[in-house]
Length: 395
Image 1 (cartoon, helix red, strand yellow):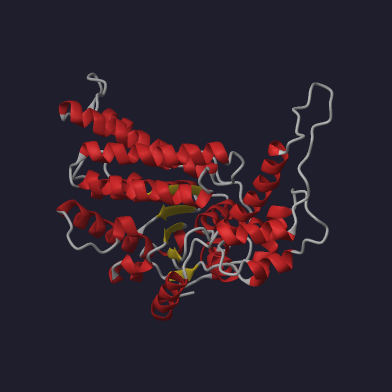
Image 2: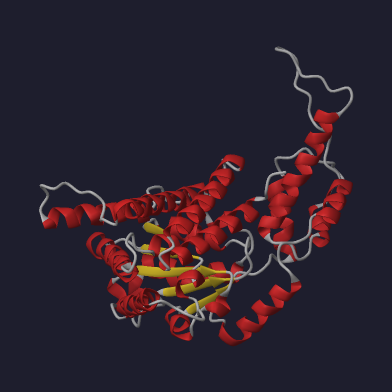
């Protein structure tokens, strides 16, 4: 049985985080192995769900992991920097390196995601409109400035990445999607230089072209979170990030540069970083109304019993995330398709024959799925988010 999309995405993030840890400690072989596992999970995700709106994001992550693997393999071979044209001047070498970094970090295709496709999450959408969309369109209406750092936190599978993608589409600017692996230096010990280079690149585009730029940093806790022990490079990287964030906040209304951090573990972030994220937005589990809309969305292309009511489904699957609900609808379709193929009287159609179709999906199918498919978010996790929100939430 194949893994659900959220499980695959979580697996990729988990392997990438482990790779980063090994990378920072100089365990290059282990780092390469975990980067490859992250790639394998993303490849499976792209193969199983080829029409996902987030596939361009996953492709960019794969490319960043592949680039890091290549760099580590070169380091393992001879501990030398990658080959460059020996005839190139120092300036040309630096320019080539900067261009490669740019290619690695910037998404060529902006996500094709509209606000309408983000079901529910009204507080989050309103906060992002107020902080990013409106100032980008009418900076003259904000004489004392606006927030430049936003933190999206909450359970996995609730739409944090989708929110970032929709915001980028709305402002029609540059969308730089980065995760912790991309923030790591190609060469051990230079991660803080990569952070500086990334922010410099973003500022350069915002200032020269006058377009809004969003830096979307997924799993930001793996980069900026609290650890029991840190090597010197990690400390320097964190300090560099603080310096760059302060530089953005001090630029005034002429610079349309925003940083969106996403995390499932906000309590892992140090207070100095929380202060730089002026908006701290809880991306919660879907409400009853949102769950009904999600079931409307995901069952609309399916053949279903006329008696099937999405409101009843929404009540039945209380506590399920948006990603969970999509998985449930996929499971319902797979159930009836499996019945069709395994039926005693099933025959493969020959050319010209009408292809057989599965029966209608019923409420009973969903009730059976409910028994064997539990929500990905526990009640303990939700209580932890509420507790943290009560202290740190900032809309």
